[in-house]
Image 1: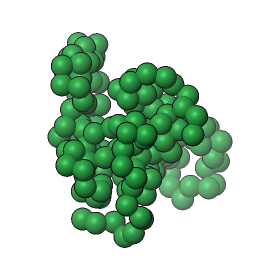
Image 2 (image 1 turned 180 degrees about the vertical axis):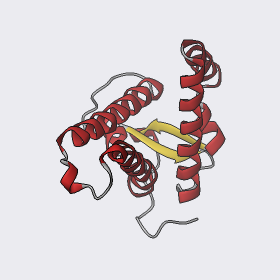
Image 3 (image 1 turned 60 degrees about the vertical axis):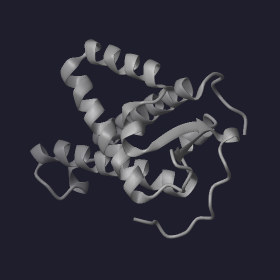
Length: 158
């Protein structure tokens, strides 16, 4: 597959994640703007919360299920990336769930700390060579050509 972004897996990973977040965010905004009140069986003042909950649920399911099936999200695969466990074993639902939970903690920290938090996160990444969520979850993002072929798909292991 032709790769859209040249460079290190770090840069590709950052571009892929930003693209995924924007795609889901703008998808949720579009859905909110175009869904009439008759489609949602809740009070109009609760519809925004319902849309955000649905968008977050879909995003979480996508970030957990796609790496199990494809060793990365479709956008990561488009950027020539693959998520693997640090010990070389196949990904499990526990690893992808833990990875998502750590990403959410990072996002909350960035919202609270702002630009200073982003600088700290980038400094950590530059020093350790990995993002904190990958380190905490025991995973790493590699170029697809450097990874071993994935094991055949089967039921998720916990």
